Length: 522
Image (cartoon, rainbow, N blue to C red):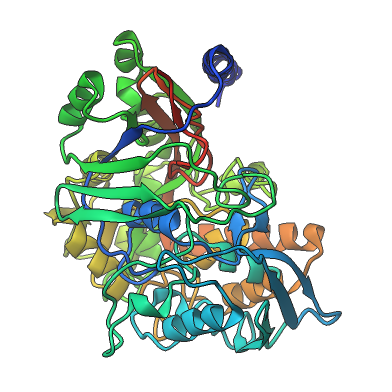
């Protein structure tokens, strides 16, 4: 990012923050009222971690809590657990539960509930994160024990720097659902968690309503992201499903909704001109081009490197982020502590080199299908631009426009050649790589099956030496630039728009709105 753009963005964020602070000082926070939040599509489920996407995650984490949660600074802090310790060899983790957590059905939380929730997910073959916690030679949970009502113990095969980050992972949904959430047949039937919100109503395709849980027992730790106190001021939150962005903007203007957590970056100035509050922050949603390395055509790394040379990452990032973000071929975001300029190294844009590699690999003009969808404008726009660039370099690429649910299912099962995709925020560098790396036989969503990289990732998970971890991540990115198992494009900045009377709205790297602390100015 140029110094001018960096300064401009910093000034913009500072100005927005100043406006927010002045508004907040004008009136003390008040309890009561409701707020409506925009969803661009319906959620998929309220069963944690199973049938999920980013919209689903955002609501699931309002209803349930895990032992730990991510803080706004990307650290891991307390949630259901007040404290925890690890054994000297790093293989035994002991969590002490807070004593005031209550389920929405009135039952008090005990360690037996935590163990039962873990066992249920572990035994569910549909849980995608099972592979994360069952890595031979890496992070492998061997047992979970409840020695007394307030203590839960995890035993892992090897010490792992990723154990806590994965326990806090937004995507994995390692939270505690009461056993009454499930029927006698084991099937999920109703969301019963310990969070500050309980389900009011879910009208599929229309809205999800959450009601304040009056018996909520908050953590004693300071509120920070998904960690600490979740004191809610509002009586009700309504998530309204409005698939069309223009219709959502109109709803924000009229007051049918109060908050757009994913406003279009190109519309920021227009929204501000309409008298709406617009806040911006660096994002961790990583836009990518996924490549199926098991595909008969794409398994040749020369073909994949040709794709890397054919795509002008700078042009894509410039257009899609309005110049606010530079290309990011690596899953290591500039917002992460491990980032340095080596993570920008990538095959240079060179269509002539791409054509030479295609000839060398014996590419015979086979059709390559690029899956995309129209639900997410960025994914669709990226796919159109990518198709044009690849075609110009000698590839024969056809767009396959699917509904989002089908595309996501294809990602999970590995049923694609290319996909225009976006990873929801991974808040730890190791987790970001883990989303790509793995054995496809153990998890079809794994994109990068390279034994040396798996070894490096395993070592990075086992060591707490930050200097060594940084070096391992650099080695992994260097190998990624050779293998090209996917092509990272950019990290999308967050643009959050809200009505002026809605106070306490604060963007954070996880990208999902935190509803505790939000209040309505009267």
